[in-house]
Image (cartoon, rainbow, N blue to C red; front, top):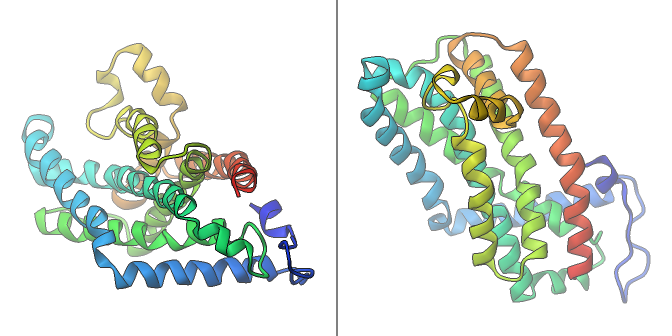
Length: 272
């Protein structure tokens, strides 16, 4: 990410684009604000992140709570922190879909004619989608609290869990942005993204303990970054190990960004 923000590019037909150290970051935040304003003026774009927390919490809580924990409220104590991770990862898919749609409509060709860093629209699109993660988490915690979920640690720890979830969503969005730059159709991006997201989120200890699963699935969970993030969120929200899972989550988040952000930027530059 540092490498992306450090680049200072020129746009065709323009003189040198602002060479100050934070010019690209300023342009990216300006475009992020544009995306945020656009989303707030079209609230139907947030319909999925508003309904998914309610549907998944009610479905898993009432269907599995009695069988696995004897009580829905007790089951929510382990389910909700894991859902915070799962739902933010699901929300990150839309970054790639929207990016693919904008590429197809020629929006980014218009940005090329502006005196801004060439990567600024891409970074701005990622940052602007942060509202989706916030809405997801607010609805999830609010609705689950009505059903009986309670934070057993403290507000700052719960906030840290939410920030970890947002960080993971932000990191994975670069994977889907890469798909959006490589694949030609938004529908193709969404289809491939779901192939990626399902084993990543459901191949976890979100619904049942690891010990109840076959050995090959346990082996997958040992290397699945979503598992570490879910364990970290549980520790921060309801108690349990924190240091190890949080460290692993931060390392995975940084690693995913370090690998896929440059790849997405390179694919975007080739496409435009």
